[in-house]
Image 1 (cartoon, rainbow, N blue to C red):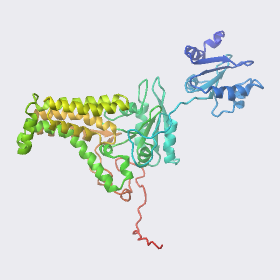
Image 2: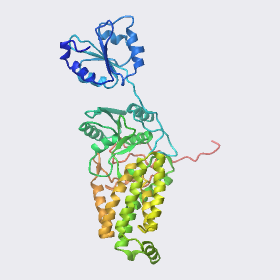
Image 3: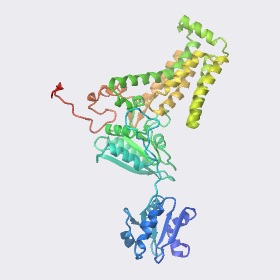
Length: 491
């Protein structure tokens, strides 16, 4: 149909349509009694809008110009363009185009997209008993709506970019103007614009590509599926990043303490929240150091074990043919296999595998004399402790760095554990997030920021935003200088 006019065939529009016609879901046809043709991808548009609103507008009179067509259509955002790149983008995002074969190709693009999206549901990885029960979905516009509902101010700015040579993924950088540091905003936008990759499937891609240290196992941007948590960090002065098709957002700059702060901490009384935050920090340290300490003490420092406990360990390890190092590695690997299998299988089967597999393997290993029951308790407790972190990626990091600690413990004992811990601290000291210190407020020490770090003080004590973020406006609220009034019940 479009192959008869040789002049038209030489145009860029004809070459684009020729490529599109090779796809089975592309339609192009002439408008009866008119010099115009229509083209669109039927899998990207709503056919009822095309038939009821677009084609029905031309039953009484056939327009002769694109301007007349635009005036008759009861649809917003209709545009006329001769930019072939713009035409291609509109075709691929649910527009139908009107065009003529005579003269220089100019098209009228009519947006009639069919957007399939999941309904807003409850959070899965960040579920809390108290607080809102909304989670991000795969639609970028829906996610921005959820954030704007919580921050209904014009200062909430959205900068949209398109990344990916093939995917053309919409990426949105979100921040509060006048609060967020403009240097942080420019850093994020420049790094995203500098990405050279063909397809962006999730915000996790962006998190890895714009990280300060791409070889570090620690995530330098924190992801979340909760709109309330993202709104809170935006109000604090941080930067949020969305990717169309991803049900999570990432934010930064962040510090190591962020890994231990659950949003539920701010929904609880401050002293209760502080206690649980301290518990998470202790649990992570225990998860990293418990098994290496077991290996180090049994290999080099058995004199540290109390006599009563030593007799128990001798009885427990009497028939085990492996040294403590190999025993610990085999048991840790078994735990990791169970955890990985449970995560990859369907939910109900995965839970069954994790519980039943752990019980069966643990009992069988002890009865067969392959491992001691003391080590089994240590490894199982360490695995449970690694799950106390609110950020899922951190539990994966803990699982990874535990093995170097075990190796150093086998080679040098507790000295090796100390050496490995020194390497870890050295790495964290050099690590940054969007150019900001990763160990802040501990290093560099910033006493003002300690009010919401290891512990969380009451909201009245948090009148200023953290120094690490370099917010333009550090003042959150004006503290009252007058003393509190003792209210009388009769007032």
